[in-house]
Structure formats: structure tokens, C-alpha cells
Length: 392
Image (cartoon, rainbow, N blue to C red; front, side):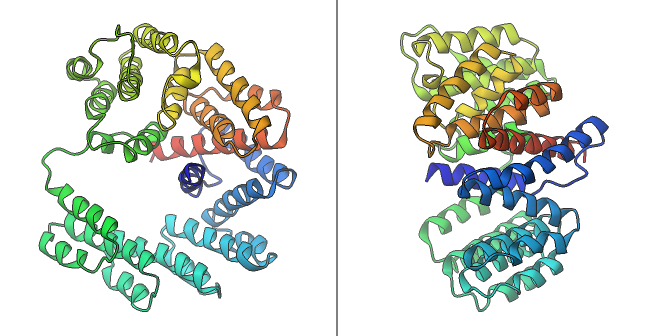
């Protein structure tokens, strides 16, 4: 379940990748090399990883306007693989706001299960855009309540964002799943809040890592630490320090509970943004010692990518190498353990975001197996996409 969630999250990010990823010639050249390497490595890895890499390649081709090339691999497959890959093309086109072509390709899908999935992505996009009539037309005959509920939820959120709260509430009564209805009600009320969520003010991999963390946490658990990061990034040192004072507290306790540990990791991110890397490094080292000098015990599963990205920024290569070595050993014993390839992705994404492209190249050369190389390259492409988005 966890692995599926993480893979889907990363795949969503990768679905937005394109060939013209950055103005930086060095990064553009490397990105093209990485894309070629994905195609070269994909046949050498196990089937589940092939599907993941192929989905990414299809998304890149579709997003760059090469629809025929994107469809070709799918049309060579049979059954679920064909429909899955055509659905990936639809997702890429939706991300690019090419809704009409997305609809045309969704109509090529004859399997009802995959057809409704592909169609609902287009309907969601119409709803987010405010074309509610088109969104409604796509779900009128949709028999899968799960997908229909998702679209109706997006319609409710659009109405709410545009001040039509009563209409949004009325539409929410159409949602059949109680959990989704409750979540939609919460989202409907969100635009009425005076202050935006601090998370909404972040971007890049940091935003996505924290979004994953908070999705599995109580509401507002880490708001002070996130607000400290936001203020630090904005150059508001006084406000950042105020939030840090609220969330750091005593770090000398004999035992630090998991939530406090994650709060301290987030606070350390803010300290790095303030230029206080030494203080941040001391906090992380103290957490490491409290965990019995075992990096795997420093944080929870959902906080681990944030910690790893922080270690990259602190240039703690000793810690990075120790985490990778242990992760590789576990992965060799249990190839279903996704933490090691996920960590390779996080490493490459963070290195690219930090502009450390030569280090990505050297890490890639040091890896031995096709699957290790594949996941590092996928992470590098993700980092390049974050940079492209930051320049828009």
C-alpha cells in the first residue's frame, strides 16, 4: 500500500516531464541523455519497473507533442498494458491542457475499467478549469461512483474557490463515499480561511515531500515548522525565528518522540534557508545520536525524504553513503522493499535542484545494476522538472 502510494506520487510528478526541461544548456543536454538512458535501461529491469519507466517515457513523448510516438508502444501491447499506457498518454495530455486530444485517445480505450479512469482525468481537468458543463457531460453516464465522486469533488472545489459556497455545498451532496464527502466539505471551507496554508506557499520537491508527510498527519501538526521555512525562504528572518522558537523547544530530552523529531528536521530546513547550516547540522547530529547512530531510526517513513534532501543540502556525504549502503543491503535481501530505489530518486532529485549535476553523473557511474541506475535517472529527470517549473 505504501509503495503504491509513493510510486503513484512520483509518477504524477514524472508525468509532467518534457524534452525542453530547462534553459540551462548543461541541464538540457543531460536531461536528453537521461531520457535516452531510461529507454536503454528499461528492458533490463523487472517487469514492474519496466511499466513505471515506460509510463514516464510515454508521458515525455506525449507532453512534447509526439502523440503518435507516445501511442506506438501502447498499441504494440495487449490487454491491460495497452490500456494502461494509453491512459498515461491521456494523463500527460491533460497536464499539458490538450483536453481534446486527451479525449480522442481516451475513446480508443475499449476496456470499460480503463476507459472510465482515463475519461475521469479529463473531466477533472475541465472542472478545475471551470468548464463545468463539459465535466458534467463526461460523467453523466459514468457508472463507477468512485471516479464520479472525484470529479464532483473537483466541481465543488471550483465553485468554492469562486465564492459560490452554497452551490458547492449543494453539489457535495451528490458524493456517495462518506470519506470523500467529508474531505470535500473541508476543502469547500478552505477558501473562507483568512490565512492560506503555509504548505501552499512552498514549491519544488520540498513541497511534495511535506505534502506527503502532512497527508498522513493530524491537521496543523507541523504548521509552525513549515511557516518557519516559508518565512526563511522569503527572507523574513524575524518571523522565521519566531516560528522556530515555537517549534524547536528542548532538544536535550533523553527521548524525542517521532513527531518532535520530524518537527526538528523541518526546523533544520528553515535554519539552512537562514544560512545557519552549522546549527541545523548540530540538531541533525543530535537526532542521529539519539537514534543510536542509526539513520534509519532518525525519522518516520514519510519524513525520510525530507531528511535525505536536508542531508544533501548539508553535504553530509558520510550520512548519505551510510543510508544508501544499508538500503542496498536490505534491497538485495528483499527486492520488494522500495525504500532503497526511492532514496536513489530523492538523492538525484535533490542534487539536480541544488545544481550539482556533476555529482549526479559520478553517482550514476558508480552504480552497478540497471535498476539502481534507472531510479537515479528518474529522480534526476524529476529534479529537472522542478527547476523548469520554478522558472515559469
